Image (cartoon, rainbow, N blue to C red; front, side, top):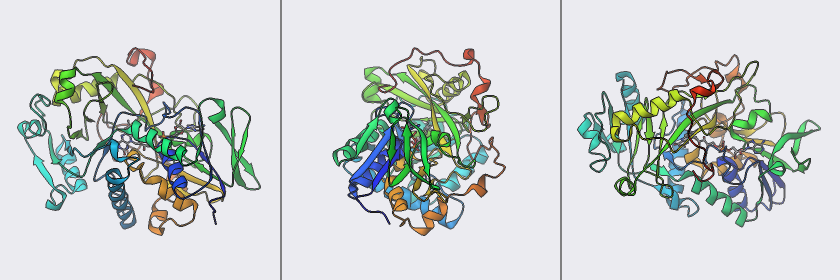
Length: 438
Ligand code: FAD
């Protein structure tokens, strides 16, 4: 049993930690502290980004409970983006264009998106003209070679990720959550193991933060604090920005998201810095230095040249007029994949005071308005059984884990690559900017 007077410690003030803090505060919890090595927005949070996609078919699991969970999550998140005033200013219901290039992948997309079902409201795109027509004249100038896809005009789009994250933390703080971020006092170096349980966490300044309940929301860094039994694979993706002119920013306003699952995606330029973010699509990078037994996240504001080439290939196919423009910013962005890409939201089977809110698996940002509510349900022991089953502690699914499994992802070399294989000369060399504002 939990009580609103219990002390609660959240480790990690990124996407899910912020959401958890907010929902705890909304339910009246009075003693909530959240720790993070960085001031909000953490430069290593996957959510510290100018935009993320809100996708109506975000992720469909492979049994009835997983499908139920995915459908419910998407429905509730979309509703919260529209109605919850902490998040709604950052939601842009601009629609999205989803596409692929190889016939097999086009077919897979058709099925996974339910693109043929009239009730899903997709328009079929088969020619370059069709694709170009989804945006104002002059935006999409490419030939779209072999592309086929679908356009959904409402009920999906993109969000300003960083602003939504900051807004969630500001509201949590206003409601009384203690935010302890930046420097050694926010850097958790160990959990406090006592009497077969977890009683809080120790930070790099030597302080022990004792709590009745501890919630681990450290994203890709969680395996550094807890033996995850191979259930989390820290995996990174790559993003790059290019500077747009004031005229282009006007032209590129209110665009739908454009996502080719083999090439990459973009959303309209950021309103503050006038930069267009592009992600190249691929199964991800791990970092396996010699003798590491788990992929090791690290921060870097550059991307491998092979990813730069993929970004430029994507641009050449859809916006060739931008394909050779220099990058103004780039970074690697870490997330944590479970073997089945379902989230890991559960109480630890051995440490009864430890709750886990991890395993975003590349589709966890769009749930920031609601995911914390499920994490708090879990803490309170009232998570709906079907969801609890899908998000359970499941080391049996990670026995003999194939760390190179692409997990259904496409694009790039169709392989999970290893950053440790890339020498300094194989990365971009973009002049560094302040990572919190780029
Ligand atoms: P994070 O947001 O990374 O938070 C982890 C936090 O833990 C950070 O703030 C970090 O500073 C903190 N931390 C780390 N170590 C410690 C420590 N020792 N002590 C205390 N705190 C610590 N999802 C979507 O829904 N739509 C998208 O379009 C989308 N696009 C993506 C694009 C890219 C390039 C990437 C990488 C991910 C994308 N995702 C998307 C996935 C989504 O961003 C993640 O699933 C989600 O942000 C994960 O949230 P999190 O809270 O688990 O991790």
